[in-house]
Length: 401
Image (cartoon, rainbow, N blue to C red; front, side):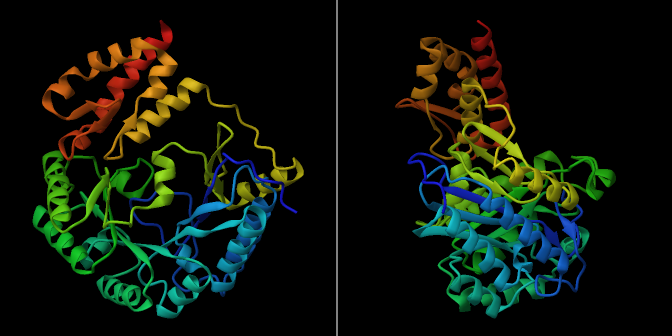
């Protein structure tokens, strides 16, 4: 029997499914490449991983009420067979419980599923799908190392509509090699035409150990310039908000009632379980990252089980948790509530805030009102990293004084 849950613990769980048919050229996520022909029904590697994953889940004591959100990320969760997804969801429900209105999200890549898969996943409880389109151009998809092509996107979108899934999101990447503002305008228009409930717009990040990281330097051809990527961000904000999407987070847009409840757990700095290779959990003030390879993760699960589900990690200091909340909270359009920070640091915090934010407040890029701090859209969002760095410097000075 599961241990009785505590009333104010985590109610969200991230589940990492690390398998991909190939590794995209920009990707540094913890994944395992299984080739173009394998999927959950035929892969012993995936079956073994699902068993280990469920062992980790069963070894974890409930710390809160029933789960209200579950997010299957990857990797490519749509490579799971229906019985494998059922096994994982059943294990989660047995160990933690699932709220009747739980949001259960699943990332899916075009070309890895059909209508029957969606219908079967939804019958198990999946009610939100995130479709990794990334581009509406075969040339750009090929340059990124993506497995799918535009024809797969059209089939996947048709399956979304025919399945009547309650909520689905579409991902796009800006700032790709050889991508122009005209390309980007076309991608945004194509995305809107598919009528998703939600859109995630990510600017390409060049990671050092990826093929892109070894081939390109940020801001140098054939990558767009920084000015061009800023123009792409502004164009997305103008185009999507005009189409009725609320820009509720730096990279995310939603129709009313379709914000991602699970991701808000992160942005609101609330605790969450993390399961699977490379996943990070944040429970009882501890952030714990699982190993990033299959072998190391398998060994970690064995140690974890034999320890009785003990996560060996230091508890984050209160000040660090507060600054983490500041960093992620400023990604949201509504910003952050300042009273917890004022309670922690005293009146000096307000003085520091006004001093370090003075230029941003004057320009309107930051807004301070009713004990809340937020960044303006799009100008404030565009300099979020700079604002956050300045605030960190101010907080460090406060903590040292």
